[in-house]
Length: 199
Image: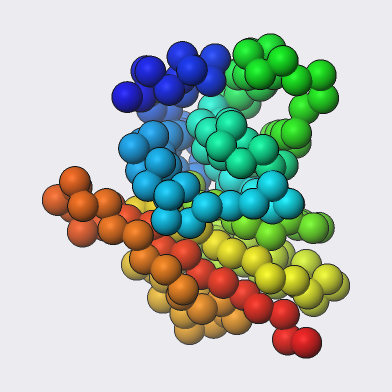
C-alpha cells in the first residue's frame, strides 16, 4: 500500500531518517497510508481547513490530505536533506495533479520558531520532545489569543507526555479517538483535540 499510494501521488516517502545532531528532534518516519485513510474516513476535513504538519518529513501527510480534501497545507521540516526531498516531492506532485499554483507552504526552520496565523488543524506524529511540544503549543495558543477560532490537534501514535500536557495545561479538549483495529499496539491510534472560541 505504501509504494502504491506514493506512485499515485507521484512522490517518494518510504524509509526512515535519524537525526545526528538534534537530540530534541526525532526520526523522520511517515504515517502509514492505511492509518491516514482511516483518519480521513472518521475525521473528514473540509476544503477551507488549513493544516500544519509539524515535522512533515518528505510530505506524505501534506500531499495525501490535499489529494483527498483539496485544502491548504503548511509543512515544517528542519532536516536539510529531508527538506530537499520534500521540495522534489512537491514539484512532482504538482505536475502529477496538473496544478499551476502550489497549495503548500513548506518551511525549513525549527518548529518552535513558527507562529501560526490562520491555520486551524495541527498534525503531530511525535516529531520532537515534549519540551519542544510545549513551545509549539504556546505558539498556537498565542495565535489563538490574537485570532480566536475553532481548531484541532491531531496526534498519531501519541506520547503519554503529549496527552498529559494537553489535557492538564491547555484549552484543548479530547473529542475523538480513532483506534486502528488491525494493529495490536494500543498506541497505534489517533487522538483529536479541539479548541472552541471563547465567544
